[in-house]
Image (cartoon, rainbow, N blue to C red; front, side, top):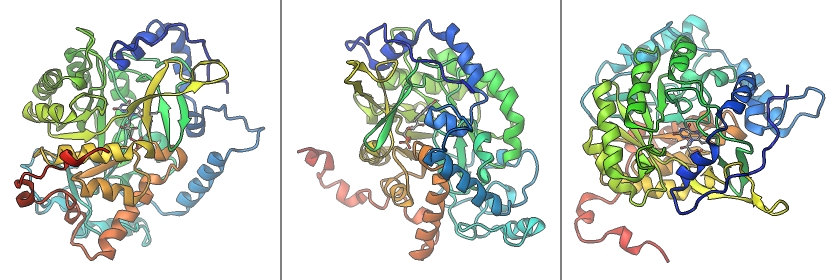
Length: 458
Ligand SMILES: Cc1cc2nc3c(=O)[nH]c(=O)nc-3n(C[C@H](O)[C@H](O)[C@H](O)COP(=O)(O)O)c2cc1C
């Protein structure tokens, strides 16, 4: 299936004197019409096609990734799937409870999406299907408060833009094992995304400039809502926009969509009024947060951009404006040059760097933000293993998102989950919550004038 458009030449240079994200948008402007065709074609793309950028021709030798995917599918098919209750399962994740250190009593029984060691229903429900429908993490207390009032059964989420709309991966494994998944960035209107190439490999990571390709909020709610309800996993909708109204409208369009338990605001978008990125400016970020809070009772998670001049200031501003959690971090701006063609590899010039290459940056920002904020922090950036996830949790994150790692190994989120369960079991901890924030400075030490920031750098 020819789903990938041939590469177009870069005609519009990136204006480095402006915010780079704004320049990316400018470069993509006017592409919408041409690329609508591509969006339609992409709809049928397999996970392999989407992740490798290669057409899926049966005639050619399978790539390493295809071999891995097939092996993963076979392994997962061999596992029994636990029985879940029908629609509404995921949306039963607990919301709006006051923030607390321990899960509310009876929570496990109240929500089938929330299973802990103390959930007596887990085994009886599983036994309805098969005796062996118990996973390696079963019986371990991994429950976390991922956003104020939003308790999830475990701290492993998938990152926006790397897990489609969830249903694609449901073919590969039981996605109800995840704490939650975050869908692809959703805008008011359908967007075809940026010109090719939109993904380039880098050492320990990838650069992407997908450009928020999505079918628009109303279509997302209509098309995926019903399917999300049946997945048994809480859904967090990633919201993007170019004005405060855009963010509010997306949330309004998504209202009542089955399975949705929270919104994550992608504030790495330029505001059409003035061109400044929402995520660069504490005031703008606070404005969009407050406006969305007015529109919904669901928790609002604000996703921080590491490209902001002062990420901690933005985090504090959105907390004051009512955010229920922050995600740290979105991608880091970067570029690769094709030395033969003497021009940038990506169609937009610059793009967002993700994967293990950005993990130390993400852990640093998580730590800096977690020590200043009272609301939960969700860590993201280069998580590929349980040990990576532990770094974020110890730096103060309450949960983590696995993103780019799923392109190389679609089961990476499960490996992280199983590894965290092993950590709790192996260290005889009561729960994964015992790990959260353990690397943060203790309050007494913190007040003695020693700020680690002072020592940072060479
Ligand atoms: C291909 C791709 C698409 C992405 N799309 C989005 C998006 O639509 N919205 C968003 O907030 N973040 C998006 N991201 C950023 C990720 O959600 C995540 O914050 C970032 O990649 C860091 O995590 P990772 O290193 O585990 O991938 C995207 C990342 C990649 C690689």
